[in-house]
Length: 338
Image (cartoon, rainbow, N blue to C red; front, side):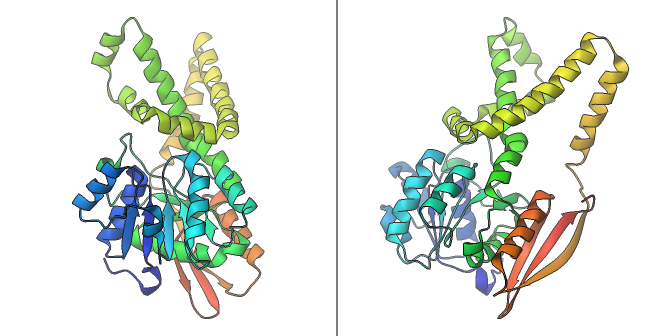
């Protein structure tokens, strides 16, 4: 893969589990100057065995880097951010890969870091954990949320170019609070439902028979219940209010299904499943309208940020960003239905 000039920074990846490790492996495979760091010595040895440069100390990893990806457990991100800021120059761009954005974005704002920290969340993963589960192509075709700020537009543009070109991901620009509301229903509540179904099976007096007969619907519906429990706990607690609000909506729909079944009303039950099938069917082969959108590099930042966040809220994404002397041009994709 030939990486464009503007997407060839010197990069560090801190925290090389499933997500951070996949970021590290992809950057290394693309030929970028990248170094990893993980607090676990065994993980560092494993990365070196894969031929990936790895530092023993965080400060060594971030020295002279132009971009730093912050991974690791969600509760550790604020402290890691502070440590990285102290060890890097003002021109070093920082982003994270955590699954919630509101708390870390608020922390960065309070610390005066919005000019160089862009909250991020690649929407890809696995029910496995650790560097051994990492793969360099994990993010190909996946949505990767970035939260732009008026003070940090230059860094946001750089990250869009890097992520779309090197990772082949779709960048979804989105405000941090909107991101947390969206992923509550798209990602976090499914972990609750998977846990509830798998947990009910575990407690059932027919447990062994249930597991023997478990077919695709059970396996698909409970896949993320196999995620490491502490990782799921951190994710749910980090987005508690939005998850509970989304869960109320899911519970309400489930109650409608149960009531239709209780009333033995086939028409109502069929109608509810037809409504659900519409959303399910829209997951695949969604048509997008593609176009370029340009802004003056030295224009009004708030206008550019507002347009970007509106695009993400409407289900759109970016597949590229080109910055010339006076103009920044985004390649945009908006759902045809929007």
